[in-house]
Length: 102
Figure 1: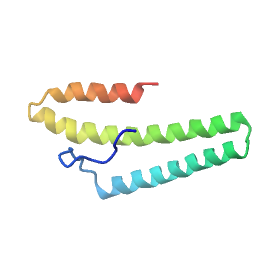
Figure 2 (figure 1 turned 90 degrees about the vertical axis):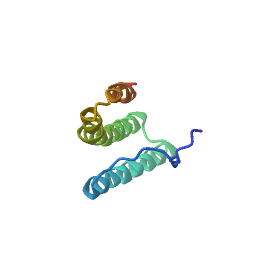
Figure 3 (figure 1 turned 60 degrees about the horizontal axis):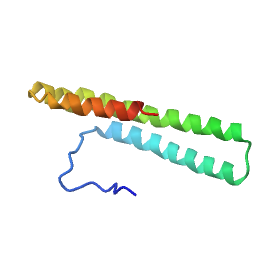
Figure 4 (figure 1 turned 45 degrees about the vertical axis):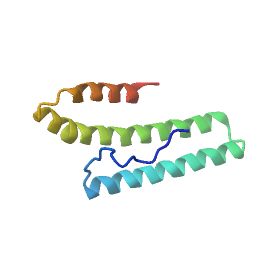
């Protein structure tokens, strides 16, 4: 399994406290949805109902990703472009490909 702990030299983002709070609330809700899906499977809930919940959870995760991407574009990418760092475009393309990969 991949190590998800940040490395000491890892880049950081600069989200406002409101954005952090918003994302945390959303992620807590998603965490609850995942636990709910697990419980549905354990209770042998009808497959279509489980799939509906999975779809809702995926939509919620996409919403979190969109919020993060918007902030990334408006701050990190913008600042690097203004500083003349055009390599950020390659990084952004990889990021978008990850988000749209299914």
